Amino acid sequence: MADEDVLEQLSYSEKKVLKALNTLKTSTPENIQKEGGFDQVVEVMNAASWLQAKGLVEIREVIRKNYSLKRKDVAAKKLPERVVLEVVMQDFGGRVSLADLKASGKLKIEDIQIALGWIKRKGWGDLTKEGPDTIVIMTDKGMAALSEKGDDELTIERLATSELSEEDAPEGVLEALKQRKDFLNEKHIVIRTITLTEKGSELAARPFEMREEVAQITPELIQSGRWREVNLRKYDVKAFAPTAVGGRKHPMTILIDRVREAFLTMGFTEIRGQYVESAFWNMDVLFTAQDHPAREMQDTFYLKNPDKINLTKDRELVDIVKQVHENGWKTGSLGWRYDWKIEEAERALLRTHSTVNTARYIAENPELPFKVFSIGRIFRSEAMDSTHLPEFTQIEGIVCEEGANFNMLCGLLKEFYRRMGIPEMRIRPAYFPYTEPSLEVEILWKGQWMELGGAGIFRPEVTEPLGVKEPVLAWGLGLERLGMLLWGLDDIRDIYVSDIDWLRKAPQV
Image (cartoon, rainbow, N blue to C red):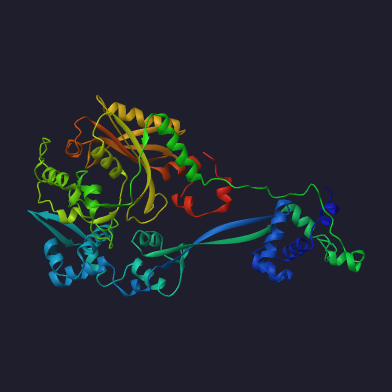
């Protein structure tokens, strides 16, 4: 198309943007608004979008991450590792047993565990065993840190007064702060720049007439006869027009339906469960000791109301599970050898896995054979990052029949992923309190192996109290991570940010 024809088909706003860019060269929409005399930035972006479709400008977008404190009082408090450092150095001379540190009352027990993790990570101290005692010893680096604030502490002070971008803080500091629970807000700011293309530069440098045009003939124009006097904009029937997009299902809904179909066609029955569970069904029935780290506040969401779930109706099973934990009951196991407490088992929580659904199913349906699965939301108190969410979807399943074995479990998992379009996966040995042997499922993602979930054969300590002596094959797989692979995403959070453009274009797989 000749340059004259292109110019003739440009709107008044498009010509204003070209004229402004002829002066500014590369600029932001806000600067173009001022230079071109636009009333609003949206007018600039509308015109620039059309110019980009015609190959006259290029719009670049850069996403900048800005961070702020979730709570302003965070800056007024010392970091837990700083408190422990000061207590150990000033009250105990740089060396103290973990028991004495807890007894000092300067920090909550759960905060001490967090603080010790950061102390080791920062190189401020070490933990050693002396007989039955765990000893905390400060290093030279820890002693030096006593009189000097770290980069993270200085960054927190700056965050108390203003937002910071990744470029405003020392490398890695904001990423480390993001790992602390309820610490930082992350905001994405889109910075746009508009640049003339070679073709656009040639047109913008040419003299052209700037006059307002009427793009829509109104009844008022016709009745008044003014339509004879105004400049009517010419229309190009070959011009770009946006694609008409109809309604469609969310990609997660489609993926859930696909997973459901895969298991149903493999002969499974779907079951459902509830979000709120007792620690008894979520942990104890699955042979997870009451002092297991997974039961700590930093891993599990415990409820305030209700804070307990009465276990009276499960009294017979409660008595058996108590014996399993304390001495192994009739399973041939020694158990965990501790005093099991029903108060801990009655605590109400948001389920941390959907294995609780299958445990309940076994208890209610001990007759063989059975093959069941569930797809449900689970909750874990985890810091969000590119591969972790505090609330996500788990694919759970069990198979129990005479002769079930580990090879059958591996074959089932490979067949499931084959049906989901994942040809390459691998199985690695793993440890879970309630399965033996145990495995982790990994698939190749962007050149690296990504863990999608765990599986194994339920231990007798789990199945025999529920009335089943045959092997029970079990697995719990992450749905969102599978979606990341199928949709080519780099960040698991992108699934739920409601990016309408991505939702319109996401593969319907």
